[in-house]
Amino acid sequence: MNSAIIVGASGMVGGLILDRCLSSEQIATVTIIVRKSIDKNHPKLKQIVLSDLSDYSSVEAEFERQDMGFFCIGAYTGQVADDILKKVTIDLPVAFAQTLKERSSHARLCFLSGAGADRTEKSKTSFARYKGMAERLRRGWVTGILSVLVTSIQSKKEKSPISFTASLESCTL
Image (cartoon, rainbow, N blue to C red):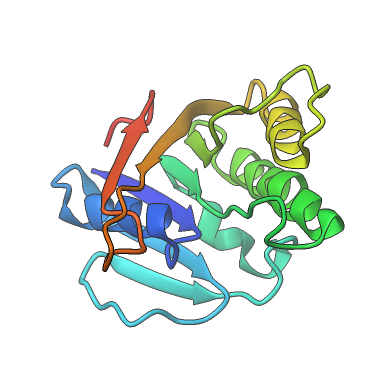
């Protein structure tokens, strides 16, 4: 039986990954690290509340004996200031990846990227450039990329995405 650790389980993609892990017969335990506790109870689920997701030193033991790690936090250009976007897109996933690698070197690491990530780091768009930087920095650590396609079909009443597809490349559950 496998174990998984997830950061970003309260978001759209992380929530889908959490649900999939909890329903999988192949996964015995699921640890989530959240800034605020989420309203979900399950026999497999362990919640760890941590306010600073750039420093896992106080919860390093939770990264031991993990078989897979999912980093599912993201932000978009214009949603937050550029320095915060860079921290969320590069610094936070690198901190997660380093801690997972140190405590469970065999674990598969999957992280939430985005369409248009520019690994050449030449894009004029911060989002594409930072996602590309993050993918390059974690080369050798990342065993899969969560490719996310959100299709938004809007009607007069519907303002939110009604179709969602996530592909787990090399992150087989």
